[in-house]
Length: 413
Image 1 (spheres, rainbow, N blue to C red):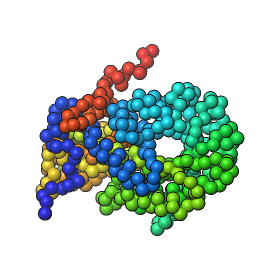
Image 2: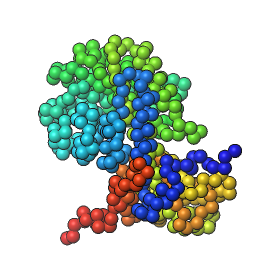
Image 3: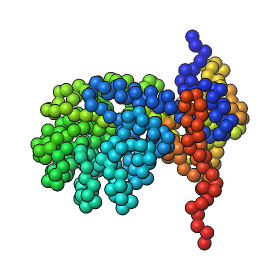
Image 4: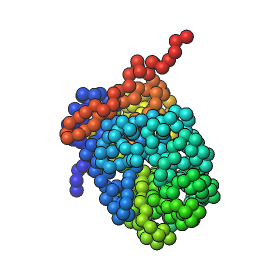
C-alpha cells in the first residue's frame, strides 16, 4: 500500500512550488499550462462523439490575459458578459466568430464594445432584440437563451425546482425568434444554463434534450435553421465520493439524445465547462501564520475569505494539503481560519493534515477558476500574484495588488 495520499499531489514538484514561494511570496496562484491544455483536449475528446463541437470558456472564470491566450490557442471560444471582457477576449486573440456576448442587462458601454468587437450575440430577453437592432449589431447565428420553467427533470433523479432569472420561457423565445426572422435572421443557436456544481450523471443530456425538443417548432415558425445547441456547464469537479464525473459518458448521453431527436439536419454541440476545464490547472499557495489551541486547534493562514470567497458564499470546497508532506500517517485535525476577524473567515472544519507549524505552506487545490477573479478587498485584503508554470519554468502573469493601487481610486475632498 502506498504511503502517499494521492489527492495531495500537484502538477508541479515540491521543489518547484517552494521556488515559486521564495520568488513571489504568498499567497500565490500557480497555473499549469500543460494541465490547462490537457483539460481542453479532454473536453474535446469526450465530445468528439457528437460531431461538430466547440468549447466556449467564460472569461469571468479566469480573466487573466495569458490564460485566455492559451485557451484561444487550444481552440476554445470565449464567453463575455461585459465590455471589459469583450476587449480582453479581443486582446487574447479570439476572432469575433469565436466570441460570444451574453449579458443580462447591457449598458451603453457594452453596446459600444459590441459594435467594435462584433461578437456573436446571445439574447437573454426579448428586449435585447430591439436594442441590438437599433445598434445594427444583430449577428448570425443568433443565440437565444432558453429557460425551461420552474421544474427540470433528469432521468433517474427527482425533479428539482429552478429559480433562474436567466433566459426566456418557451413562448417568449419563439416569439423573439419569429421577430428576428422578420428582420432577416435565418440561423439560430440555443443556450441552456441552469445549475452549478451538479454531480450526477445525465445532467448535460437532460439540458440537451430540452433544447432538441424545441428546435422543430422554432424552425417551423421562423423557417430558419438552428445550427448549434449550447448545453453550458455547471458540472462539479468531484462528486460526493471524491470521483470526477466521466465526461465521455456524459457526452455519449448527449449524443444518444441527439440521435433520437426529431432534428433533420446536423447540429453542433457547444459547452461552457469553465470550472471543470480550468480549476484543476491552478493551485493557491498560502503560509501558516500560527496555531492557537482552544476548543480545537486553529491554524491561521495568510489568506482570508476574500481570497477564496466561493467557499463562504456558495459552499464550494477545495481540497487542502501540506506542501512537501503527502504522507498518510500521523495526521491531525485542524480548523483553518483566515487573517481577518470575521466569524465567517474559515475554510472548513476538521481538515485532516500532517503536523503543522508556523511557516509551513498549504496548498488549496483546484483554484484555477473563480479564485482571483472573484477575490475582493475585504479586511484590507490585497489580491495575490499569479504565475504560470510553462516548460518547467515560472512566469509572472499577474502582479500582486499593492496598497497604492487600492488607495488610488479614493478622492480627497
